[in-house]
Structures are given as C-alpha cells and as structure tokens.
Image 1 (cartoon, helix red, strand yellow):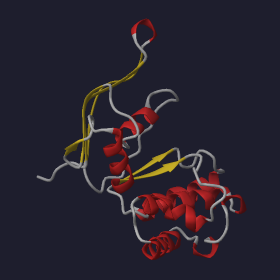
Image 2 (image 1 turned 120 degrees about the vertical axis):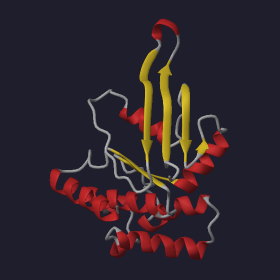
Image 3 (image 1 turned 180 degrees about the vertical axis):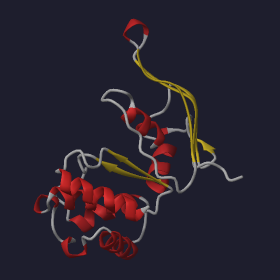
Length: 192
C-alpha cells in the first residue's frame, strides 16, 4: 500500500483564547492519495480556506497531526515550511497574486528564483508552463494588460512551474465571469 500524499489526523484550528476563542476546524481527519482531484465545498465561513492554509503549510493546526508525503509538517519551523511550500506545493489564489511590475514570464519565474534555479533553466521552465496554459504569446505582457482569465492562467502556470506534489486552488474562478470560470475549470481538468 502506498503512502498517502496528505494525512490530517485530529486537526483542530482555534483562533484566540478563552471566551473569545473561535474554533474553525474541529477534529478533522482526512487522507488524500497521490493523483486525486478533490474539491472542498461548503458555506462561507465554514473553514475551507483555513483547511487549505493548513494543507498548504501556510498555517499550522492548533492541535492534531498533519503529514505531507510521509513527513509530519505540523511542527516544522517557519523556514522549513517555507522550503516545503516552494518545493512541493503550488498555489492558485482567487485574486491571482501576480506582481504588477513584472511581465507574465517574470511572474512565473518567481518560485524558481527563490528555489535557486539558474536563470536559463528558469526561463525555459516558465515558457513551457505558460505554453501549457495557452499564454505563450503573452509572455512579455504585464498583468494589467491581460484579461481576468489570462491572469488566472498565468497564476496557474506559476503554481505548476516547480512541478509540485500538491496543487491547491482557493476559489480560482471567484473573480471570473461564468464563461471564463468554466474555461479555467476545464484547464484544471486537462492538467489533472
């Protein structure tokens, strides 16, 4: 039997203390295998983003154990979590999180820069990722020169450029019209 990609056991997240404590996650147990394609849905305020922040090593559970690819990351230092995020996790955010002053190609290169990848290799990998999402002709454009769907595709390319073990998308169609949102979901289907 293979080792799960993600295992959360007894995951709790509490913000604040005493009477002001807000319990967002309560004893969450889940296991995701490699190659699974999973959607987490629920009402606004139900803890979806909090759960994703924990799974993406942006936050830690207040209690419980979180294993990512067979290593307990729930107690790692901030520096170690940062290394894991850069090397093993791709993020796609609702608000794109692109740097306005950079070209789309430079935006996609950012994770590779922080990973210490040489310039030429960064450039080649980023071009390939942009081609994968259909933006090869737009590499010299800045985010403000792209449509919302194109900005989201650029964000997806950036999330894929490090060949992550895990890709997390937090409401990736939330800022898009329904037609463009459907195109982005089709892109995720194709990438999977």
